[in-house]
Amino acid sequence: MTALKGRDLLSLADLSPNEVSEVLNLAAQMKAGTVAPQCRKVLGLLFYKASTRTRVSFSVAMYQLGGQVIDLNPNVTQVSRGEPLEDTARVLDRYLDVVAIRTFDPKDLQTFARYAEIPVINALTDLAHPCQALADLLTVQECFGRVDGTTLAYVGDGNNVAHSLLLGCAMLGANVRVATPKGFEPNPDIVAQAKALAGERCDVTVTHDPIEAVREVDAIYTDVWASMGQEAEADDRMPLFQPYQVNEALLDRASDKAIVLHCLPAHRGEEITASVIEGSHSRVWDQAENRMHVQKALLASLLGAV
Ligand code: CP
Ligand code: NVA
Image 1 (cartoon, rainbow, N blue to C red):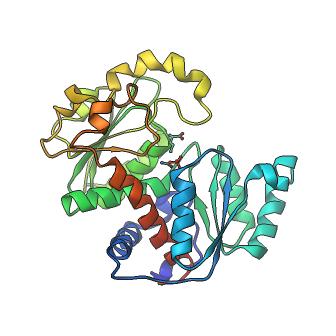
Image 2: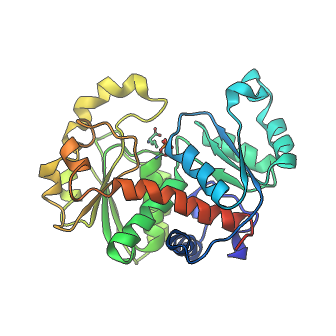
Image 3: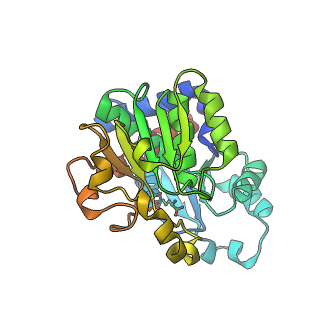
């Protein structure tokens, strides 16, 4: 894993498929307690958006590695008073060993990464959520013993979570189908990138038909219909997305052993019903737990502790 030392994770495609598998396998070993790397390093969390899972799982992961975490809330740093990101990046680079950034515009992440030499981790932008995809893939691997050859359907908004899932599935040979309302399809550049990564190994499909998308799949995945920053559109989106709700009727179309995934936070009665998220097919709590294991493995790798 020394190949990951010092690198950035801005998109999942910054890693090779083999490196993604290595991070997942390391995470599984760390979760099982058979490997316990240590590093006394400092992680900064620069989050411009709300977060429960990402903030806490990164913090706990770093503490368990023997390191420290500094919360760089933009409201209590000079960032909110207009200090250029280029300057902030060059200064924080001198103090921190690694930084995780959650922001709106992916260009901000790229700017920070260009001006800081330490590893920069994408903790969610409007375009991508690669740490979430790592946890999603680990959950699939745990449930089915493999990712390669499984089939996942993502039903809902073609957003950041869908984008990273598309790339992750394509990289590891899982068939992936994304079903969205018209006008809410995933970014065509990401779809093309996923198709190129998939090659002949697996299928990448984008459709407007949720029923066709979930037919006999191993996993159904959904996320909120309006992401952070899109709250004003939420009411207008509701009727358009209603046919894409993950409910008992949709779940019946999947394989009997299908699992249900959601990155959380969930809106019960909107993108997923209470009975499905609380039901026997749901693996959302394991999936949320896995955020911590994959990020701990990622931090240990980027910091050269393994
Ligand atoms: N899934 C996820 O990233 O959750 P948070 O927004 O709570 O970090
Ligand atoms: N798509 C959601 C994911 C939250 C973890 C958002 O960006 O708000």
